[in-house]
Image (cartoon, rainbow, N blue to C red; front, side):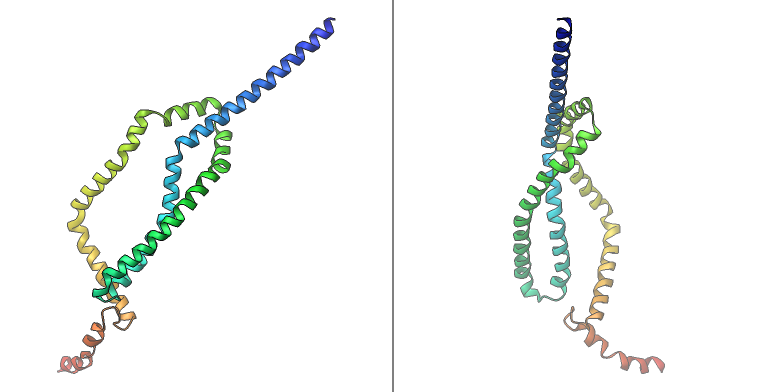
Length: 204
């Protein structure tokens, strides 16, 4: 009889322990899901960045050609057509990258949270990231950054603009020479024509 009670007690203890461990695991998983939910805006921002980087590269690559090789009367219409294509790309690519980022966060980020943080640490992290003060600070970051950048541009422009213009001019001349004057409508070719005549004059 006594042995039976001991066996029952042990079985009950094992059941309670298994239930406790299961509840512990579920609780940790729930905390991880809260973290991913809190971080969703940041994850979506990452996805937007992935989509926008190639778009910026496309626009940057088109800009010199637009300025140098496209006739002035066609530049505005050409620029608008390029903008339409870039917008088309962004509208198509951004939702795909967003969905992929959110989906893979479950298999990439969630396991790292579970592995690297204890349940107590996860609770603390959720509390910190979900803090109204932190959210207020994060909401202020774009304004602070934009205001600072605006002031920096105003302050440094007199010194930076001449250097930028010199670099642009040098690059324009390099490209113009490499294309035989095509980028400037043949101006360098015509200005280069009298150069041989100038040499004898210099010898006199």
